[in-house]
Length: 498
Image (cartoon, rainbow, N blue to C red; front, side, top):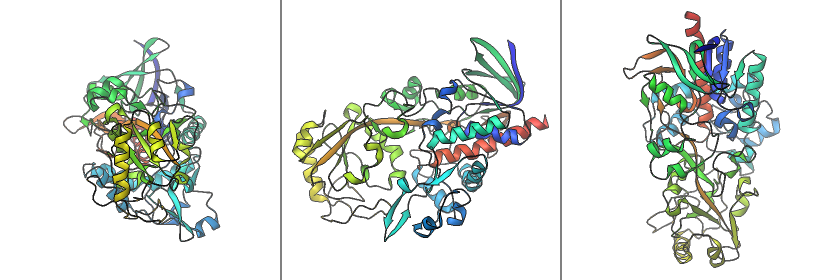
């Protein structure tokens, strides 16, 4: 096999975690090469499709101004940013993962979250306050909720553009259309990778390798094998290139399989969206305003507690619930009180939507739904909901719950009885898989005996042990950036010692 390159550190992937790894390694003195199976136009992995929110631990607005450069005095004065402490962050991670997340790894991510966002700003990433997504007016002031005040300007695509612009300035080269196919070992140490470059198998020698090329969400065979029945039919929210290649390479090299391999982040997604992420529409196929309405299946029955918690803490598991319904779809139903509150993603032209002046008219238009069952469900729900005219406030769990239903709605329950009505058809959109490999807090990949595999590091979706059952919104980009930066720094240190 012919030699293609010799470098200190090779990074597989071009998304958030990979880019942070490459920059951190370069800034630690290493000669760095990035490779990607995708073309340059398709670079960025799932990050290019992300909304750009990043969860961060902060004690108050003084911390946030270190990240968000453009906050004005008026915005600071008229906004309740609150606090989101390290303990708050950890509590949310523990609770949504049913207390299974790797505490040591989670504490590392949380402890480095603010410093990493400040570092990203130093790399040219621009942040803004997520007023349009994570705040609402309470007592005359904007109030943030959910621990998510920071969002990248331009979303995930803006993050990728900024990081790659900085990488180019740092002299980091990238080989596109060059999939990695295997790791090279010398005794027990990783010494490079084999790639398919211009139709030929070639070798890239490196003193350290960082794998940051995503999970297996774009591989229908692996989805069916690990996630179960019908997961091969789920829509893929992001890139088509996250096929599990990095995971297979790591496992073949002796890495320890770790985390929740039979679970994934999956949300409510436009029913007729394409099979893979649309580079133009991107995340606008998502439908996350369900706390202000009800969701019903083909039988016309509700199947989730739409108000169980803030949407940011439930949306990543509700896609799984939709996929378990007859026909693998559901309809989200709203009345005229809720319709003005629907996110902008409900207003795109690529949407499966019906309208009706009455629930009866709406039922006749909801394709695939038993109209009689739906009307029976709505009659029971409207009778059980508090007869309250209080406005919906997204930033507060209002405790207004249904009474007497086997499946309650715990917050934001109002009768859905004021026409006109709208309904939106959704299915499951998978974002990323939770299963991965075990790493240390230095991002070193461990073997089955718990020993680091010399020269091998990983970050991003390939890391196992962070998410189980569920996922708090905005955590993926933060974990990717923190652990990517950690992996790059560690890999450069290892390469220097060689």
